[in-house]
Image (cartoon, rainbow, N blue to C red; front, side):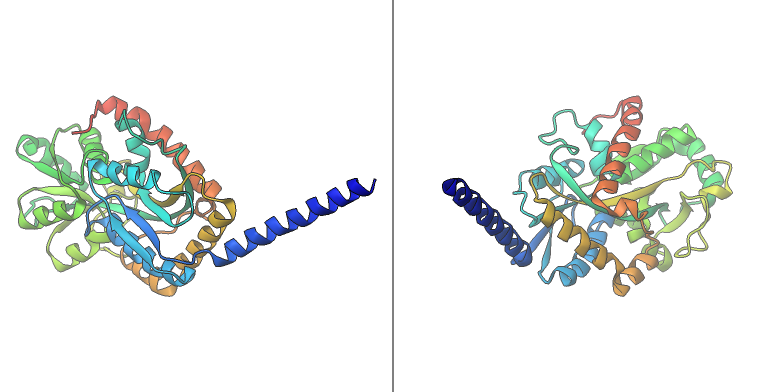
Length: 329
């Protein structure tokens, strides 16, 4: 009897000890810099968004959050790099509808499964998409744009950050919805595509307001149409798709932070709480509003809600990609 009591007492104190160690570990986390992997080159909308979030998250966590650009293959090089990182809370991945939901179907031989090898932390921002064109592009608004494309499609090119990226998908959606076939020119990142639009080397691209707002306001590109039901406050002079004869040609890009599988629940919880604090910072809110980025729903800012969004978007885009017959280049 005494031995049994002694054994239970030992078990109790061992359990208390493990809980204490876990609490100490969480209290210490993070005790060194974190890495946020951006699966595109510097200068594009995903990179710009990541750097704004990383700056605010660094303050919330009390540790530097270092942005690491890992471009290539429509975001799958960065996805592979992140999937192979330890699940310890020190490596994060930023992804969007293109790099996460579309690539899950587009790439048949991915070394990772986005639904099994990552844990969503939170959805962080929904970016309206705009058709940005060379300065001398002759159309304004979606009706004029559609008419011009139907007459000139064989001579036009749109830019994209690689097959499977959000910019590529936007260009393809326009082709499908307007019944045209404009050639897509793929770059290693959206920033390079924007530069060629500004230089007049390509005709247009579907771009996030994260980067487009400043270029449209400065006159470096022409804002043709925002792919939303109504105009956005950041670009009040750019017509919306809802004002046209194609009111269902709507397109936003959601953005999400994920961590590799195996990340402990308590670390995930602290990351989520810190990320929510970062997203509420006045400096970040001001920069998001200037870029036209909108808040996800409160549910989508939870790990469970973000996972539900990811799962539904993978399912949503699967038949679209199959119908397009798209393959990686």
